[in-house]
Structures are given as C-alpha cells and as structure tokens.
Image (tube, rainbow, N blue to C red; front, side):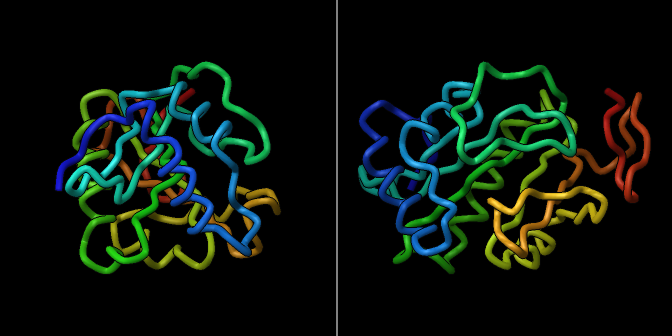
Length: 178
C-alpha cells in the first residue's frame, strides 16, 4: 500500500469509487467535476495504491475558511488560502474499517502542514462523529447548502497544536485572518 499523486489513468477508478460511495445520496459529482478539483491543487490530491489498484483517494484544495465548493460546478483555478479544504475522501468498500482512511488523512495533513494552517471539510451522511474523532470541530454558525444533505456539518482543525501567529479564535479554534 502506498500513497501517490493522481495520474490521468486513475480517473475511471476514482469516478467509480465516488459514484459507489455516494449512490442514492445525491452527492456524486461525476468525473469532470472531480477532475476540476484535482486541477486546482494536484499537490494535495492523492490515491491509495494497493498492488496497482486505486483503493481510495483524497481530493483537497485551498479554499477560504468557512467556504466550500459548489457540488454542481467545476472548480476554477485555486485561490490563495492558508486553509486546505478536504473536499472528498473515499476508500473502496472492501477495505473500509482497516485504517485506510486514517492513512489518507495522515498523508494529507503531513503534506499540508508546511503550507496550510487549517484543514476544513463538510461532514456528510452522518460522518461528523468520524471526523470529530480525528480532531475536527463543528462550526455551528456555518450554513451548509442543502445539496450537501440534511445532516451536513462544516468542520475544521488546525494543522499545528499551538496558536498560529496572525490568527484569531473562531468557535474555539484559531482561524486565519483574511
């Protein structure tokens, strides 16, 4: 098992994993939208390669704190931000529950730590508890659009343990001053 950058030939597998993960929930974005998120920040998007099989992926891109991608639109070029938004992380169904998601998240945070101050995400389909157990905190004041689902929660976590210079506290977490 290894983490590696996404290659052009990975997209049919990534799109299939995404479609399977979100089938029935209306959250699947499709290949073109997923690829646009990758193009916005290829250095923070990875696949989990298990014996030459795309067994999972993570798509993350810079986004201002408390903002998030529109699920129906392709992504524009990356914006400058000290916040990295973890937009999507999927592990193949037969490999879930074995720490593969934690491996993806650890690799992403290690990669991001030198450039970003925070990682944000929107927890969907009741996964807020999963993300909270990994250090993410909900921001109750952030309204998430209905396209993300009824129980969607905007969450974030700092990438360093200490207070970050030039930041202020928001909902108990240091947040960059924009």
